[in-house]
Image 1 (cartoon, rainbow, N blue to C red):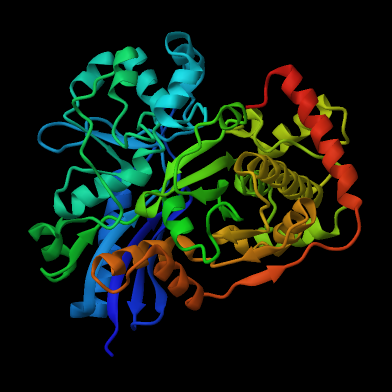
Image 2 (image 1 turned 180 degrees about the vertical axis):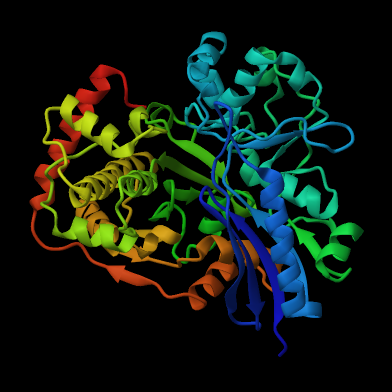
Length: 502
């Protein structure tokens, strides 16, 4: 059988890729076509996305794919991070350069919104955890600083929706990314217009929302001409939130019995459910309900993730260090265990100018030894992440009412063998590491299903498993982590008392 080719555009906070998925009827073989940096663009004192440059890189990747795979290309679809968006005028032009979610303009906006609408009402209308980076607070910040700008917008699109607009002209939103905004209703499955109106925010700009697997249209003639892609290529919306695509590619995901960690710049830790969890406990623990494939929901918590390691490395490099990630992990392996612990989700770590300095400050303020070298900083970050994972898993068991038997780590972070072992030890559960390319596989296989190649979500996961390598890591014997868990809880309680933990 001749292989059919589907193309996935997968953009994260550090880099983006155009990937080819070659489908032979049994497995999806993935090949990287083009990789490019995404990253923050500084415009004055603001943090933005250079979205037009990113689009130019995507076009280049699509052209490379066309030259390589020609008429075998069947479809293309994009996934990215959540919460960020673009505003278009009636002509389809960008009204402003899109903001990066780490920009400081949202500082204090969460509190201002809560003064107008109660947290309980916001959670009931969205099912989403309270984080100042959420789209709701971004829009409110824009309304506070420049209300005329929002009023002039004809269309609001999340970042991957805009990429699809550039591909085929569709001005629709996609379900999984819409649910990250904190103004999409979890049970009505439509925009929470009443919530936005109470905050004085416009709603006419909101697009129609479609489900993953929806065919959005044919490629625009100009894009075909510039890239060489043929007229038969379909634009199909995958789960456009990268975590939605990643969880679609998790082989062991099922109703609450196996947890997943989509591990990268952020760690998204949760379970898949058929209905959102809007319980008081989910509200109290600040969990989120994000949409998935086939109307599923991902009950999860955002954890700061490998951002801590990435930013430490950036600071070390500024100081002259040439250590890559592998070298930093080796140094962490040699560092003493449990010397210093932090809460990765402390607001201090969202976007500090110097991550090692922020970690040192946290340790000093909680009466702990300050890390002394690169290995100790990275060991602190990785052990703290593992302990945070363990705490969140305990909460998930409490909320779902059943034992979570294993943790499936997917994404780039699944390559970090030290973190995988620490996670197994801290949580006292086996860790399944892989697929590394779960996001891309989920994206590609949703496209393949939309083209009639697969049937159910279970089929997608079966193929993802058959197309990948998954390593099992067992917890190491001994109870050395019991004391560490107690210390972590004590440090966190002390920090919560100071009002800085989110």
